[in-house]
Amino acid sequence: MRVLFERSGGLAGIRLVAAFDSAALPTGPADELRRLVDGAGFFDLPPLLASRRRGFDRFRYKVTVETPERRHTVELDESAAPDSFRPLLDWLTAATLRRKS
Image 1 (tube, one colour):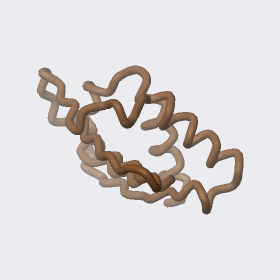
Image 2 (spheres, rainbow, N blue to C red; image 1 turned 180 degrees about the vertical axis):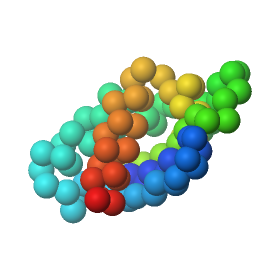
Image 3 (spheres, rainbow, N blue to C red; image 1 turned 180 degrees about the horizontal axis):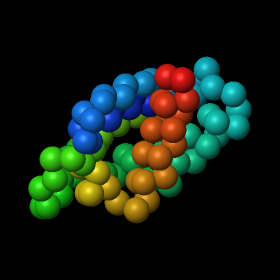
Image 4 (cartoon, rainbow, N blue to C red; image 1 turned 90 degrees about the horizontal axis):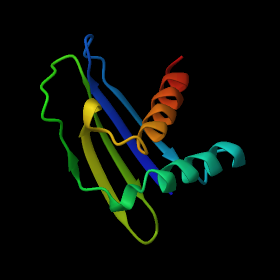
């Protein structure tokens, strides 16, 4: 499984971009990433999740998950993220920031 992650916006406007390949990750993180994608119901989400509330200081996310069988992209506003999706966003954000330091 390959996960492409992009976060933009926020007060500082700093963009984060990363790609994660479960085959290249250690077993623990690879298993956790698969569990989070499954727990988010990722492949059942619509391609766009937008909030009705405007907020120029909020983050925007774009997440693409590719498996041998399928590929799906979800773009969303920070405030539109379903509760089940937040752990995946948190993991991807933290893992991306760890790579940058």
